[in-house]
Image (cartoon, rainbow, N blue to C red; front, side, top):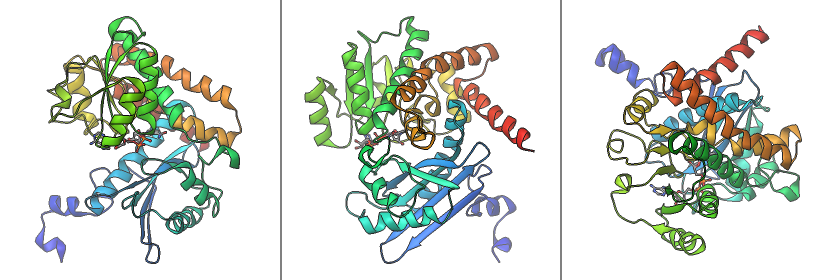
Length: 366
Ligand code: NAD
């Protein structure tokens, strides 16, 4: 028996789900497998106190299934706090599909995934994330109503990425206001890491305001296109984090603020779209604070996308989407103040507000 071989501590670590480092009282985890289409997916439902768990589906070529599970656990938890702090009546969920979105994503696979989503009867509502397009959500919509981010022509709110980028821009300006005493980005240098759906629109906003942008991406073609379009400088070296910039905007994948990068960072502000930017929120939030770097919490400032897809459920229009997204500016300033007053990190301050809202609803529902 495994218990005869491992110490209790090792045994705990070996627990495949509830013992996972990123397991945080998630309500439900669903493993989806379909031999015919090659679908291997995991749906994570973290918390449904405020409403159905809504969060995008990511398709990624994970090195191991453990990485995929860890990702969905972290991402779905983040969604609970994102919706809570944004004042939406939604819980937190997320899904990952294991595989290469460029070569393994087929209409059949997407529809099969949709059927699994449907089997949860609305406890989980999906949307777009890395590796997904609006057209993929349209395919999912063919088999289930529990999907958002479908095309505008099909009655949806369309691609959420431009609104996400606008919200990040709002959060970035609020953080800049606190650190540089002006929220105008003219003359500031911003490093945008990852110039995909969100990153490119963010580059657009910053350059329009007169900011200088340095871009980095693993996709060479995107670098060329975005550089030409916006006059952004390309960085291809291997010392990205040491660049002397004012603002660092992580817009690729999470956990880029970690033990290896934190000491190198020169930026005074971190504000980007990527989810779970802090590799370990308990350690790295405090380390940033000690270094005098202001971190705009990711789940607060990248909420534009969920505001956009929530519009499909609540049937509000573009004006309300913009208003709610612009509100990210004020909320970011409030969080910075709260962190300062309570001598906690900005991440902790944001988390506290989100948890309090969930707890209050839980008590109301009792
Ligand atoms: P995307 O897939 O369109 O773009 C990601 C970009 O990052 C791609 O161009 C990719 O080549 C690049 N990239 C990947 N690894 C990289 C690396 N190591 N270094 C540099 N570049 C790298 O994704 P997106 O929709 O723009 O989302 C970006 C991030 O924002 C993701 O973490 C996503 O979860 C998060 N986010 C997106 C939305 C949204 O509305 N799309 C909402 C909230 C959060």
